[in-house]
Length: 508
Ligand code: BES
Ligand code: MN
Ligand code: ZN
Image (cartoon, rainbow, N blue to C red):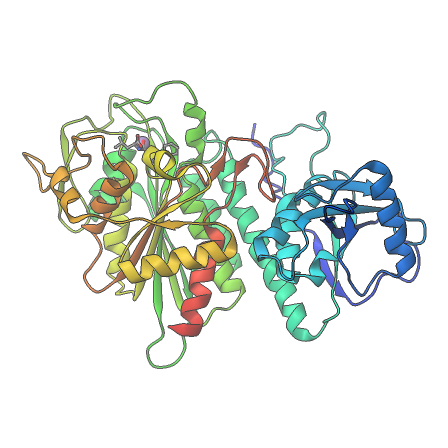
């Protein structure tokens, strides 16, 4: 079976400064509510210029009758006959305050969108608080992956087709912000689609083909290096990991040349593209091995980000270098104890074939550094140790101290919440090999996330500011839905990387 890849249909977004004049059948109006004070525990509508006292009164009376308290991310659907919509969806923001962090609005919008199910038309006043966050949250919350649902199982998607974002400020700047938010959400959806596509259907050659099609459509330069060329050119890490699979590896390069002037900033992006990680001969236990469909989450985010940079016409050069391989055990697979030569000449003793990500990434990092970038951001579902250290929702960032902190700050701002981690010098000793320049794992169980970062550091060229973002768990939600994040692929860290690129475009 090879179902047509329809992907997620991004809703259309319009900005408006008033409610519709006539009743719109089936439209749902989303309003923000806050919880009351101790004396008066009723939910109250967050004031906005679009609702008159009658409309607000109808909503608040209905909420009180239903016992809705306006708690954070609580949703309640009510009718308000005087308003030109079929119903009103009140979403709680918790305690009242003067200003909300963008991610509180994004999450509230996401929860609202997830509760819609079948509503085609939404009008939102959350946009009066933060237009970008409201749009991003609604689109991301409406995201569904239904490429593999047969007609018999309805619904195929969330149904949301049209968003009207109400804001008092509809100048062209606001329209640009809305378009930017829509592009960002679409990019995250692209990354999620890649992660959610099962390994039966997304293998290196197919992944490369889809990346190429997306890149060409966005006007990027595209280069696909196939398995023969990889072997000939000395990409020992990608070849070594890929050789256990009947589906050969690839290296994809996507270039956005937006830089103008004398010396435009150049940013290299590198993402781990293991389309499935069995562990290889160092095979993983069966329990939850299917989660390893997410092992190309870094690659997915990097591809989505460079496409987004082109769509948003960022005035910098961005080149994505994406190694793709399937890590399988077989008669042709690499063995624990094998030695391979990474691209660039460093030799590695492969003590554990399940530490495969760093092997394909090292080749890609060396290749990316040949372009002489100012910055390099690499991201990967690299270690189970990330989850032990930081949990399911907090990526770890390592690298050059200053740039690492900058990446973490941008990540906090967009709500992806990456946290800075060190690369202690002494960990390098753990990667000594008795036969080669390096071993791919340490003999100790300590600091697995940092040891992996230490391995990658060996391959970054001097003078390149770099960051490694480990998204092992944050790229793939195996728990229940929350905020604007459903089950499965999350698209993390697409928005972090794009925020860093925008920052570099403005501040160098
Ligand atoms: N893809 C895994 C890391 C991973 C684990 C991602 C759980 C998402 C969820 C990676 O290739 C891996 O197997 N890492 C090993 C490294 C070890 C052998 C040093 C790990 O974390 O166990
Ligand atoms: Mn592995
Ligand atoms: Zn892996």
